[in-house]
Image 1 (tube, rainbow, N blue to C red):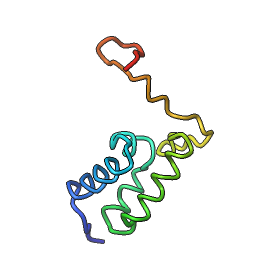
Image 2: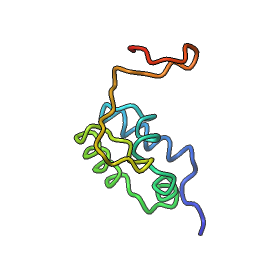
Image 3: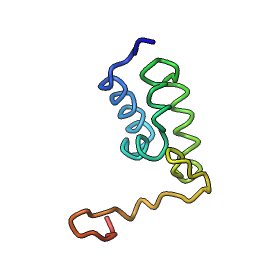
Image 4: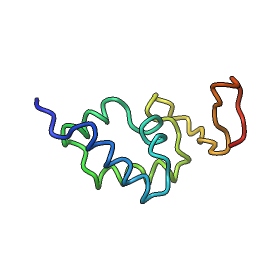
Length: 92
């Protein structure tokens, strides 16, 4: 099956929706979208409208890490970020 969208096009879609919905695109790609979801977007099987709806529901549910199969509803804490140089959690 031939890929319909290039990765750059998929990234542009995610960034556009992230901006419109005021959520970081990196959170969408690391906590919401699994590799299968990303492939579906590339193949045109995941529409922009459907992705928008999924993002809206995901944000309303606290942005749990669905991409890695964690559906226990542990919300994302936007005030903590990982500082790789200090190797500890710091307030952003």
